[in-house]
Amino acid sequence: MKFLLVFDFDHTIVDENSDTWIVKCAPEKKLPNGLRNSYRPGHWTEYMDRVFVYLGDNGVKEDEMKRTMTTIPFTVGMVDLLGFIGENKELFDCIIISDSNAVFIDWILKAADFHKVFDEVFTNPAAFSSTGYLTVQNFHAHHCAKCPKNLCKKKVLKEFLDKQLERGVSYTQIVYIGDGGNDLCPVMFLKKDDIAMPRQGYTLEKKISQLAQDLSPVECSVLVWSSATEIMSYLKVLVKE
Ligand SMILES: [Mg+2]
Ligand SMILES: [Zn+2]
Image (cartoon, rainbow, N blue to C red; front, side, top):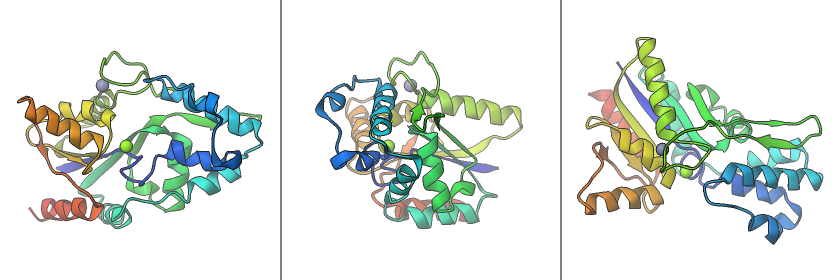
């Protein structure tokens, strides 16, 4: 039997938002107001596609974007944690479910040699066009009223678990590590024996506390973390049991 570790990416694996970090490539490291104000709630992917058109129009090339993205800092303790998971892959399956995009995550994981730690990465597909522009698409379509249009992380997790079950793989415990509002939907799907690890002081932790105050707490256990060292300590206890 194995454990399944589910990671969010932005503000969880890395200590920044990758979609904000790329703005460092823009002229004067900022976006024009008209573009910045064009974001409509729930439609982040379309907004990012416009950001990438702006970068392309300003002559920002793939290699410059890659150089910038690979300077994004990892969250404190995360390098050790991912190293530990990598050394114990017989115990842990490990996936990423992220609203960033495939190109950024691939660059960042490969540059740090962490790509083998993860069995699968579920995120918005992205690619460079023949004219050198980065383009990003919605991960999928879904009917969840709680989630942004392009991604319901619960749907991704559920489909992954169903696929694994068909292959004869089931998990002793699911550990979900994240920070954002869009991590609440998958956390609410977790069962009694699973554990949610919200990052201290971030939206997911606040939403989980609010549910508890409203007397409709999440079913799974909750362990708040502020450095990935705390997550590693928990995993070490799991491994010993
Ligand atoms: Mg996040
Ligand atoms: Zn959802």
